[in-house]
Image (cartoon, rainbow, N blue to C red; front, top):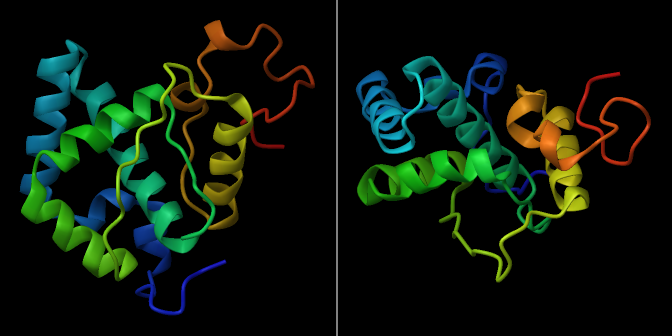
Length: 152
C-alpha cells in the first residue's frame, strides 16, 4: 500500500530504478561496490539497481518493515555513504527518510525476503532472483519451497 505522500513514480522509473538517481552517481556507487566487493562492474550495477528497487518498495510500503538480501544490502550501504544524495533520493521517492535498521542477527530470514520480493513484484519493480535467495541458502529453490522468488 503506497503512502499518501509518496511521489508518484512513472512506469519507466519502476522498470528501471537506476533512472531515479543521476547517471554519474549510479556510476560512482557501482564502481565503489565493484572495488569493495571485488566483483565485476556489471554485477555491481545489478546489485545497485536492486538496492534502488528495494528502496522504492520501502517507499511504497512504509509500514511493511521490508528487508534486503545480503547482496542487496551491499548496494544500500554504498548509497548510505553518500548521505546528501541518499537523503535527496528518500525525499523525492518516499517523502521521508528511509532509515537503515540492521537486524541483530547475521542471517536474513527467508520469509522476510519473500515478503520483500512480493512487494517489489506487486509494484512492478524488477527482481533478480539470484540476488535475493542465493542457491546456498535453499536446497530446493523453484521446487515448491516457501517464499520462492522465481516468477510464476
